[in-house]
Length: 415
Ligand code: RNT
Ligand code: ZN
Image (cartoon, rainbow, N blue to C red):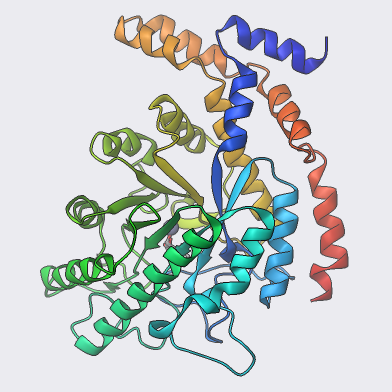
């Protein structure tokens, strides 16, 4: 018997159908964030990354143009199993030579090249209005600014993005998840915590009221605990974003697992929100002590999040997107490590006998439960993963990096 056949037999004994697991995983789209390739710079402005987030590191080879970014993403997708989706930010608009429009005036045509890219590869597109890295951020505020002209500029941006999202969905035939994250906040002690939140809520509802088909455009709101330079107060806090999503028609909460206090875990929040929302969305990242956006790995919390999605039977209710940016290592490798890690976490979750484990919990057999949970940790999962990669036509864990090294030498270092 091959190693795979042997491993499969061990799983069968546990009541796990690995063939079904692999088939199911192959259908699940994971959204690949375009911003890992260029340190979240985008193409619509030359300034630095500002507005509460920061990339660290200066590894050579960052993408400078849409062509370079597209080529890098192709390399990533060729090295990762599973279905993908493209996750774009509005700042990645592609203008005709000499053309430039501000963010409140963006139109579908500015993303036509991305649509062609997605269509040629048979993938959907997710979208994000870009409320950072822009001169119209006044005192670190956008949608919550007390300045009416600032606020209306950003509301117009949000509305333009709803229209562009619907265009993506219609063109690709796949619904578009549009996520709103604003870095709005204050460095020091606030004098008014309520006003900015009321303005943000009103602005969010104005954006969500832009006419759209709710089956095609899924508007999300992402919370955060704090941002760089905004340490004392975040307008879009956890409670705010959750309640805003709950009370705004067609709005979905998005949890980024880097956006909570260090001992809070999103894995525990997933089933909590699934009690109330038909659909939820995730940004999968790796926080190290804070929202550091390290490359996603197959670590305990990554695995636990995947387990929750699977055992809540919520694979069709959770939109999964990667969100991190590491400029300290090869960016293409970072992307591949993260996407493959999440795929592994999902496959491992799909190869877990959840019914059996749940039953032990419900029967109060806690000793047996912990014994089985520990035994599962050393099951021959690697052989299942290896077979999955083989069937998907991508290299194994020991094989893919050679291709990235070659790509670095031939393409990235020539930039
Ligand atoms: C920032 C948020 C947000 C961004 C992207 C680029 O802390 O996580 O989702 O990372 O929109
Ligand atoms: Zn995020």
